[in-house]
Length: 450
Image (spheres, helix red, strand yellow):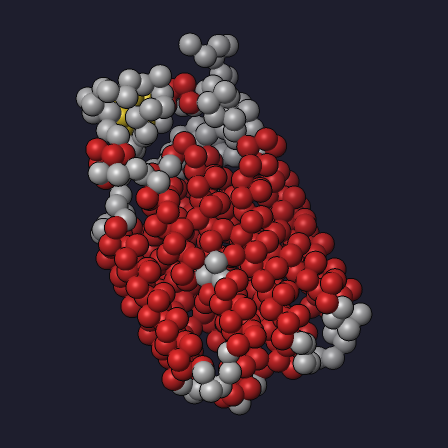
């Protein structure tokens, strides 16, 4: 093991040629434990989680109060997803060039404006600009900054820590889902949304001011990186998740064919996820789905979206990230047919909530798994920009899923959109079987770890 009292800063390489900067403890760099660099991104993700699921729960109240059509209401959600996905690569680019505080503060201001717009305006055009474009951009900047921060501070526990932080983007919305679905009214709308805007801005801004980046290639002092790269007793994912054979910057990753395939997988995943949110919200607005059922189904969707990431990150260490990703997409695809069965049975509450939970788990797991898969396949140096490219596929998928949901809620007894959404998940599961790690098919490991 590396001597924890050895403060000589130096760089070492492992069997795969990856570089590690050792000799600096987290407390030496931060003045406190690096657990702060997981807790702060977690809190920030918790704060912005309401934009996606919370809006879905609030949609019936907002749309009815402002006289929006179902397509206008869903357009607000769809454009927000496009802006959030498009803002994420920008957040990754800025993360590598400016302090996290700069990006986080910009995102906090955008979120403040977004919720204030929703509180004070019912004009669809104003809401599309203020809430969807600015709010989505701000959430994208915050999302990628949080993911990048935890990625750099926890290189030896990337999957579990990214899953923890990413999960907050799902289950963090539950309190607001309850408030928006059961307590929000046209009379208290301004007070509730203004208070939420101030709270979200304050949390994100505070987290951003305290977040720091480690030195390039930093590695925790108490773990020997050369042993960690090979010894399954230290790194249980070693047998199933082989590191990259060489660095793949974005253009090289694109030429490998695997980064575009991951992009397509995100498109399919996002289409399912946004179909589910928009379908539940739109059904509550147009067909009188009880508020309690909407809240329970949306909360189940959000909770399983978050908790599914934690479960699959652990499973991925045992059977491999690619295989786990395929199983997640399979579950998400099957869940769409379950939602169809619930819809054909007059939206039976138990079935609707149960399949919403399965859908959330299947869709949510893909995002966190892909962070680790991108690093494993394309190398540490380009994890942030490569994942930013992959994640931007959410823009296309989210828009497609919202349109499919709109077709369901505006066309009585429609079946085709459910079938399409389910087939998208099944197609994603099939695509993972064709995904192969770039580089040599086999790397010969040493016969024993010293």
